[in-house]
Image (spheres, rainbow, N blue to C red):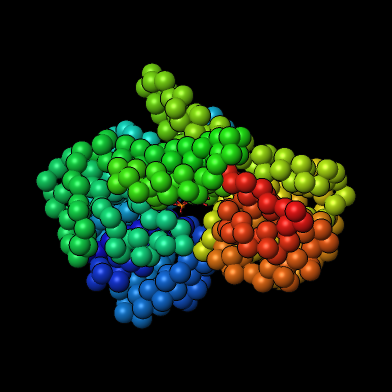
Length: 439
Ligand code: UGA
């Protein structure tokens, strides 16, 4: 099928390269002309495993190209995926300005039937607004459909998640739209839920909020473990073996970040409240998460007494391992908090340092390092903020030598308590007993 993908951020680019790899002819549209030039030259712009290969293959096959003109995208396609950003507004609701703008522009160019597909994460009832916008701005009165097709891919796993999904959710209001959507996903072997548009929109927010709720829940249990004397990893194992609960997303730590969970939970609260519901369950999820960074810094203060003027190593800046994305990263918040306390920070992340430089204030107190051990060199303590596998593999003896005082505060529970004890560290993790290698 001839498909346009409007917006080539994480979701849009992954959608474009993956659909081209399935044999569709895809045109990616982005208003950023420089980005379009780079994409057409085979530069994926973002770091996401697998995207570069599929991008090159798509360009090479002639099935994939990029342009900066929505009119060109509309002319070249039968179906258009809307993948533009829906950033949070000051009141927590999703700002749908970009969705409205591109819808208006698409509508102005439509000379015959088109299927518009919402892939950006949007509040329930957005499809109705998209439909109304098309009617207002398409003066030729052409036939069209609006579908919802939420995305469930995780960053760092996006290509695999897109090509081998657990499920595909399709929200439509006509047979024609359902047939076209099923044609687009013809070669995807997974359950496909075809439903009405509102249900589909709700599935997206309900899924992300549920996963965020699992994380905040286990973080609450971690606090309980610390207060009562228990081990949260074993609690999570014990819970997770119940097939009704499952072990995934029961990793306690510094809390969730990224461009999705924090904003989606807040937006879902707003959506529910606008509809007259009590959303206190999800406010609590958000509140627990907001407090995680402060709790970790409190542990550091407990270990160091005075934080001001001390040098602290921070491992990790990305919001999770496997990505260079620092949006709403708890690691960045942590670094900011340490700077506010008057500490000097030595930062290391295998991928995210370049992006972090845009988020952290330029300051003499901030040093970006080339390796994990270099960051630890001369620091009074280390805080682990992102779960990169290379941190888990670190030579503990070398780390012990690098730190001036062997204090590790682990916001990701990466290390085994016994190993840290044997190696002589004072080790504070999340929801587990603290360890002192001296005693
Ligand atoms: C999330 C969802 O997992 C995807 O299904 C969804 O498509 C995507 O949002 C989206 O809406 O676009 P993503 O934000 O890429 O994907 O990252 P996750 O792997 O879900 O992790 C989110 C945050 O939770 C990270 O900061 C991670 O470190 C944290 N996390 C995850 C935990 O703290 N504990 C866990 O057990 C799991």
